[in-house]
Length: 466
Image (cartoon, rainbow, N blue to C red; front, side, top):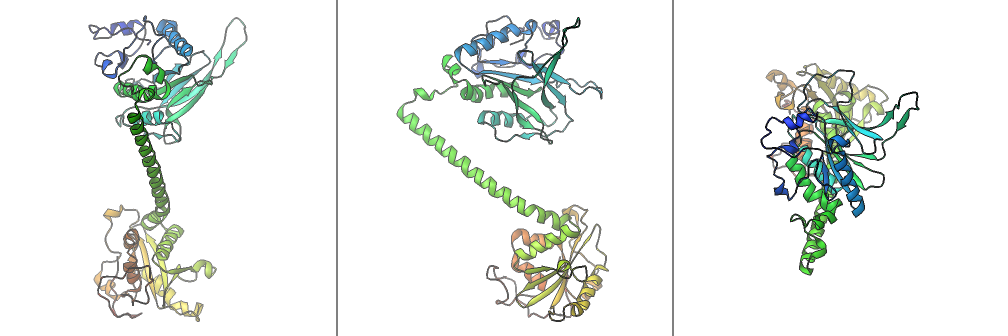
């Protein structure tokens, strides 16, 4: 409504332009197959009181305001909810915009007490579903998310109107009567698609971005919106797309109820699994980020969490010794006590990092003579500014230096791999640089299928783990 009946011979849109509009609506394109959706469109100048929805309406009398008024009055007289769909903005308008002009699109609400305005967002906006959506709104939001990646979006808001009657009369300020409920939001949480609901709930105005496929909108209207909010209209017109549950047989009712119960169970199980996934991501995220990209405290926290997951008891030595007097972590597993030094390097790790761990190992007896350690481990997050797949596989590669290492040097990428797959035995053996005696490994850690080597806290040569 609000559009002249399409004229197939008017390929240039002459009638459209004569009515003062700047663009040709996709609703009047002859390619739109109304009858496939079971719909009979009524245009400007046609009776609209029995219509089931208003598409791209106009509140002004010269642009379809009378037809809109009769549609709203007809819905009110039948006790039905009036549905309207408003495409906001102009997807084809690529003219430069003034930095002083905020609102690039607008729609005047019925009653002339407010308007919906939209500010065009930057190309590449990726909206997401708002929370707590009703099923019909969620379905519409998912359909809109399938728009082409380059399709434009507008940030929506409702504003009041200020009326200046002139001749010295009082200025009247009006506030929009209703609520804009978001369906899709942008990265800042601002609505880019939504539904304007009047205070009595009898009108629902769906605001969608321009350049949306109307076939998809019409399909949503017939199969989702009308059954949810105006089922009486579908009964009234005997729509072939509406399966009236009030006319079902006992067998149909039983089958439908069983299907609904199964869908509810599926939705509940999906929600439960999504919650499990969300919790797993919340737990894993900081450790993954810390191991692969972290430095300082963030990296130490991630390494500490991985060692504890692998069965080590850990002591954060900076807090224990009240200062940076020794290594970062003391890791204990059975009879083994290891000083763990954690370092990071934006590029390739320098060989001098090994000296820090050697120094801590040499000074430990003076700090805690009553608590001797059996060895040390240097853990390095090197090349942390490089993509993980592009990093070198080993912390150190100079063979003479690697052969001289007095203790294991492990990359955080190696720790990440063992932690990700929960290969705790491999992680423990790499830390101790030996195969574990069966009594040393925690019972929760599976035995390793690899050949075991005799353990010695100070082997003559130590191959770097990475």
